Amino acid sequence: MTDLIDRLAGVRPGGSVDALRRHRPATRDNAQASYDALFTEIDETHATRAERAAVAQFVAVLHDDEVAAAHYAALARDAGGDRLADAISDVAGAARATGPYGRYPADGPLAGESVDGPRFLLDDHGHAELGDRLAAALEHAHLLVFRPRESSPAALVALADAGWSTDGIVTLSQLVSFLAFQLRVAAGLRLLTNEEAAA
Image 1: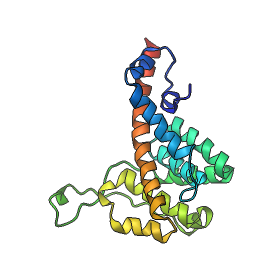
Image 2 (image 1 turned 90 degrees about the horizontal axis):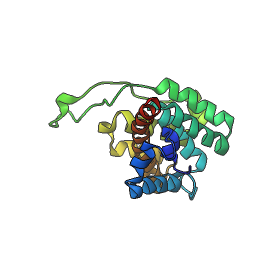
Image 3 (image 1 turned 30 degrees about the vertical axis):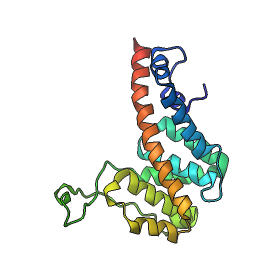
């Protein structure tokens, strides 16, 4: 089985969930093509394979998806070594939160819906271990996962200051957005496959 969402969800070939997915082949194929474009068939000029895998592992842990976290940790180990994957695991575990939350502009119509929550910032040790580029990428990924309402030009400037190019920032944002989709689909399908197995 080459479809990663099927693998993450434990979809059984020939089963009812597999048949359900085959009713929308374009959706299935496009999701896999998006994964391939971000993680396998890539140009590393603006975002390396190790950076992509590390951010993906981090985001999967933030979503409490152990299966996906293990998959992306394996990619991180392959691209950046055990030290990288282990460091991401430690950092992500400490960065977990419940969201979404964040502050809307004080003078805006949604100000009353603001909800406080933790802001994730790596300390000097984290920056030294992971480097400023990856540290900034993880901080930005945490922002997008838990505090999307606080996305701002200043957040993009922080990435640029850490060495991310415009193309790299776009790739990073696409990666986090894709993972939000992929992990939610896999989680929903996992529930169906568990029901199928129990039937």
